[in-house]
Image 1 (cartoon, rainbow, N blue to C red):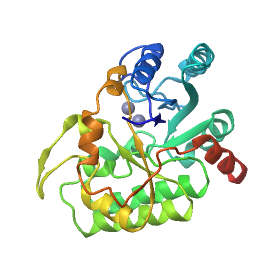
Image 2 (cartoon, rainbow, N blue to C red; image 1 turned 135 degrees about the vertical axis):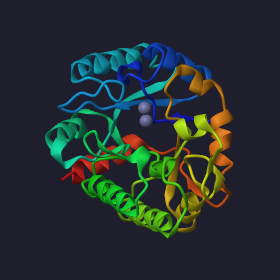
Image 3 (spheres, rainbow, N blue to C red; image 1 turned 30 degrees about the vertical axis):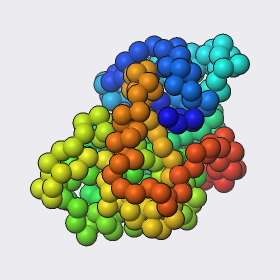
Image 4 (cartoon, helix red, strand yellow; image 1 turned 90 degrees about the horizontal axis):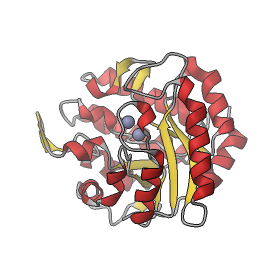
Length: 269
Ligand SMILES: [Zn+2]
Ligand SMILES: [Zn+2]
């Protein structure tokens, strides 16, 4: 079981279950000491079932703050958001950068609600994806790159383009000192899938993480919890860690995300 988890959703995104307090109680039960909420951030245009509505942001902040106070003797609660690096939403992202404890980058689209990263099947899309990640990292927008290999959910095989994507992501992570996440969410929930190139998890993917490990990138584990129960089992964590040999990986078990956010906020823009 992990001690810190900075990747936690709430029911406001429209595809997660449970109350905010149930997430906190489950995390305490699981022995988590630092719990960061990072629900899918809203933008000017809403999208039902994908991310929270702008009108719910205030309630999210109020709820997390109240829980932080209520449970302060038992767990440290941080207020974050999972954002997309979208130049067209820069004004909103700047506000989040300033107002939230930390941000994580979960790039699900190339443009707002366009270019769905779950359904990539062309090398150019991987290239565009990398460009978006670099945009976020180079602006010091985020403290972690969540599920960096998410495009492999739909991408049919592990080819040279995938390895190039992994190398580029490793370079970005090292250059801007942003850890890459070993994600225990949807990819592990789905489990082993037969792709054209053979059986693998949709993500995380061995070939990608082998490159991250070889290049010496900092890694963190993210539960990507979408229901309180996700904290109460190690099944998906074990699955994510079974894809390759992580013994030589630089897994940050006590990543001080607040200190990283402080550094990035000072460098932001
Ligand atoms: Zn989600
Ligand atoms: Zn997430």
